[in-house]
Length: 99
Image 1 (cartoon, rainbow, N blue to C red):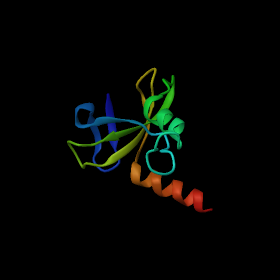
Image 2 (tube, rainbow, N blue to C red):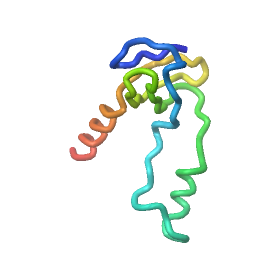
Image 3 (cartoon, one colour):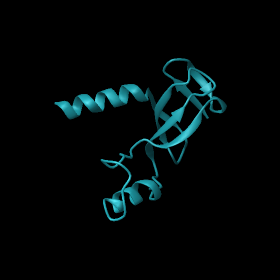
């Protein structure tokens, strides 16, 4: 599998590290004390979906430009559908929230 880094171009998988699901949102507030939002934190930490088809994932380009990337990958075929810098995704999300 090859991933196209927005900064470095197409690179081999060995330059990247998979870091998790890019669709998860951290619960608001600090990690809970017993009974205070513990269910939301338990779900965030322990429960994961196993999607079939296109899925957004976090990848780190550690052997290259050291950028965090959001990669949209088809989990059935491993085809890379889109790659973007995570910082751009965060900025776009903030703009949408402010609007």
